[in-house]
Length: 366
Image (cartoon, rainbow, N blue to C red; front, side, top):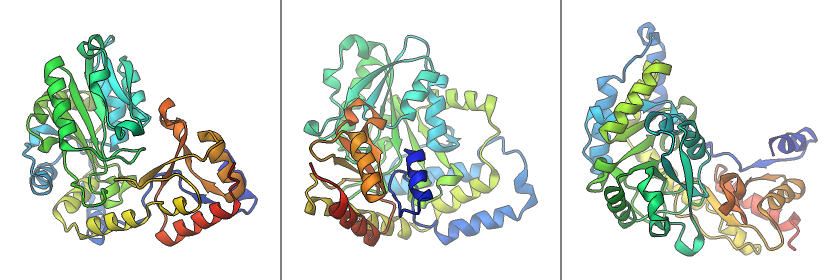
């Protein structure tokens, strides 16, 4: 797909790239100022072997204020982005023969991290008929008894579904019954629509006893390239991750730690405003041109059924050939992604309207 996209660009075609979830919003000014000030301090260029007390205290205070969740500094470890953290998690906690439960469709790094840990993967299906929620009751009991952890993420990339607290409460009950952990990827709680609550898994009673949460600044504060994320929660998992990280990493750089402090202690007006703008960008306009699209409940993505007569891949290829529009085929996220494509809502609403118009004029409906 990347090669095909570049070939279109080389011919002079206008290309609308909706394949990658990189925010088009700017980081707030106070965050840029914090990075600039820290970069001017020579002492900030040393090895950063530990997470500073200032940053850990900022995470604790943020979780208390933003989510009503009580955590302590020793229940936190920084990671170089959730992608890296998930990629190493299996190494930290899994042994050969352990089972991990992963969503299908789901973000690909969940698979890679499990493989790196030598675990056996069992996929639980996310389907529209069940509002893209997991049905743990359908997983065989012998699988649950061997399970080390289950990965969940809501609001969900790629499907754009939001989950109720009751779903997590049920999951916690299963984790207690069968002795497995819950790994929650909390990347999009600040991009959630229609008045839904963007909450933390760790705000639910009993969560810390059975699980951890990846918490990222990337999408809320538009600092994707700085790779600022945290793993928070159950001490046994946190300690295992700290031990593993001590062997391959020298810690989050001090300037980036200053960015984290500025983001977590600063105003959140821009976070709320861009949530409103993301909601405006949902691709309801596709319904007007005959696509069976529905509105995402959260995230910066929309998960769209392909028109009749197309597969996920053939739909994306046709969109590129006829319209210059680049999306991601649903099968990139697992077999249950067949029949869908994902668009990233990383263009202003006016440009998304233009994209809908171009699709309406040039995409051949079968």
